[in-house]
Image (cartoon, rainbow, N blue to C red):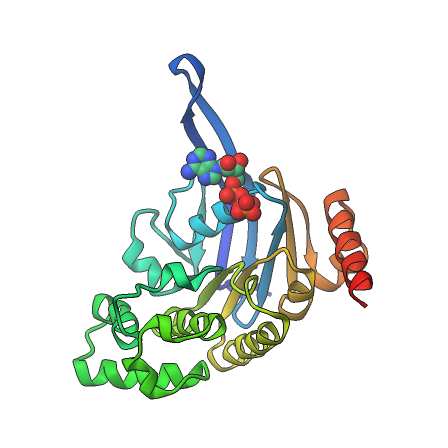
Length: 264
Ligand SMILES: Nc1ncnc2c1ncn2[C@@H]1O[C@H](COP(=O)(O)OP(=O)(O)OP(=O)(O)O)[C@@H](O)[C@H]1O
């Protein structure tokens, strides 16, 4: 029996930064040691790890913002070329924690959503406007919001706009880099439900970078734990959270359970 081709297939991916050290010597920083994983449509992989463990570096490599030192990234069996950002950005999109800094305040929501369409599609103005309206509706906003500016929206609504911008090109993978961290618990739950709905509707795969194990538990099928750029744990979410093996995972689970008990 042949195994089906994974949507995303990452093998031996690593990143070493060369920085200036003492006495003009070059110093190497291994942000990510070679790691491999695969991800299917409709599935979510969570990346967990403490500060400086390599989570953002992995996200940047996946989205094509950094060139890997070693390794390959395949999408539907096709090799993604490191420098071909245009090829990549139609399939892999990213959402960050703080939409106030990623949404250009001088542009209307319509103009913000039109940018990726102008760059990556051959749609005419009417078709683009129609797609912008339907995408806004998909993320729980109104079609009229296309004429508004980012400052007219709350943090939760701005995250929905960022999500609209991420899905407007019908990508296959969305990377959520602490994208829910700044939201209060009720907005966070609404956003989690919206993400799960969109995943079902569009067959999306998510790579979720998060410190919050509650979010990880709700959204992800698998968890990869990074420590100093190395994978120290990788398995199904249920298994990793129930029986963590590595001391960092154990500490994270204990700290967050203590916080939950303290809040009660
Ligand atoms: N452009 C760069 N040049 C040199 N070193 C870098 C660069 N980017 C990241 N690093 C280093 O690589 C390591 C991993 O960083 P990375 O930002 O990926 O960690 P992280 O897990 O995302 O941390 P955080 O949770 O703080 O965002 C760190 O030691 C960091 O200092």
